[in-house]
Image (cartoon, rainbow, N blue to C red; front, side, top):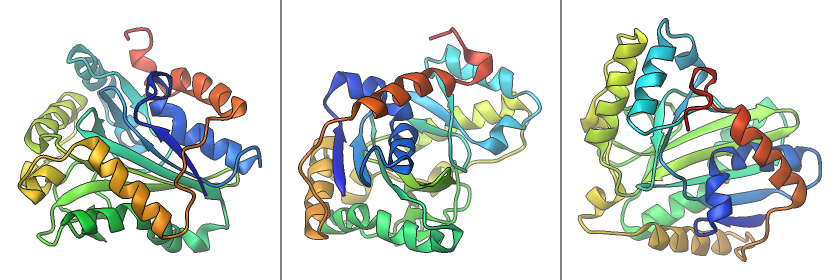
Length: 257
């Protein structure tokens, strides 16, 4: 398992919104080995397929853009989510072994993240946090049932991609309010609850940096037998990413960045 570190390199951070899909495409084409990645990103909002069907989604997206949040479209399932400097994103891409391996993919391809969170003092389990933004059945929730990390899976064109983000110090109330207003302006009656979401800092009762979480995840990856030495992005992956970072912008938001 190759490791990509996209937490410090400015170029990789700028490509962060498209890295997961571009690396997965390269893995599927046998141009790159199975890969896990940890990444930071500049603030943006990621929309899912269900959001794109809202009656006034263009109005909601335009409002998000005006608040300083470029709007992009996700490759996997799920709904709207805020990705910013307060969360550490992760993904693992492997060749697809078919839909029968979905549950195993969720379990095996997030093992390093779950182990790191447990070691830091925030044990999690898979489950829903009703009322959370981007609510899903395979999110990582605390023992109190609050969402601390979103997780999704995409099976496409020969790859399995499990991706997500850990809320490190992102303010759940602020993110929830932002997305609630997006839904209101988009014509949705969805009701979100900030109390259904937490952050790693809140759970631990102390400050922890993205770098500290990254290091804990890398250590956990090494313990389960993955290669924890950072490897470079390959030329094909970079080409895919540069193309996708533009193509995955919400169409009604094009040209506003």
